Length: 456
View 1: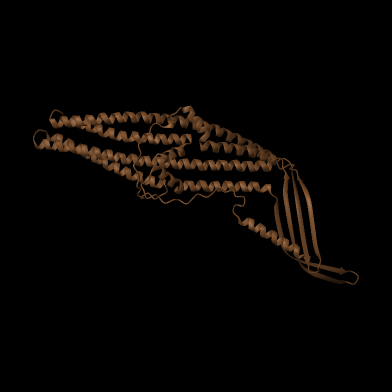
View 2: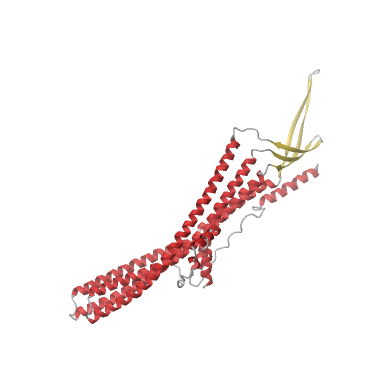
């Protein structure tokens, strides 16, 4: 008898040790590495993306979802193994005996203990067990794809925030150059006014133009501070964080993303995480149809049980049973019928959503590819514009200084030059943004960041 209870103690100990492990099947993805400290050198765009992927809360949300999906796989795969349960506890029994002839009675009270160990295992269920596992595996693939999609979104958000800050800083530089040029024009007009060779109106117009340039500079500085706060938040830092950025690398417009749109769309269907998610959701829905159908069919299981008993009357018992169980669903108010119909409808919905996602992905790639080509053309025009506007402003200032040109011509040239500077900054970072957005649309934004890393 003691040997029997020793077996129970060993069994319970093993079960407790297994239960203590959070991931006995080792299904959970490896936890992300601790966030590295920002490098002491000025931050490049790849540095910022690395920090964002580590510290942005969106990545933590996606990782937690991946752990939940892995746990669901473990839940489904539990049916591959038998279930084992043990019960143990004291018993108290009372037996009374009566003799009707003599009207006497006697009785006894017994204090004992009992224990039982039961094993149950599903042998066959028409593929339902496999289908449920396939469902959770497909759902896990969908979740992992969502993790990749989140990472690409975080990377794009960081890149656009970086480009916005760089463009704002470029706008500040352009505004400073405009202020310097307008200040020299004001000094020239004021000197000519004092010399009596120019009207006071020219000096007033020059002062107005200078004040407008200084106002534009103040606005550009405010926009730069706002953009810096947005970039800090994108990498998981408080908005007031001061970031020291490395110089913006030169723009390389000879990008592989300018290749044929049809090729880009084909790459997107292969690489985009959201399409992988849509395919996995469809596969999960189809597997769920098989699992639901299996619920309408019989299942066969096996059970093994051993029960031990001990009483103070020194009567021990040991009862062992082995049995097969055939479970046949007969009728439950058409519940299973409608569950199958619901699963089929969900599979049809996920199939349609996959096609919808494919069409949207193709349109997204086409739109972003068109935007990139347009941005490249705009940048080429902006470069020509800045060259002609700079030459025109220099000529107008020289003519006014020589007394052969009007101040109105100089003001017009100054205004055109200031506009050309701002347009060049906007066009330059417009191309950078368009490249990043097209890379995101194709599903290659990680490759784009790695290429920046390689050029460092």
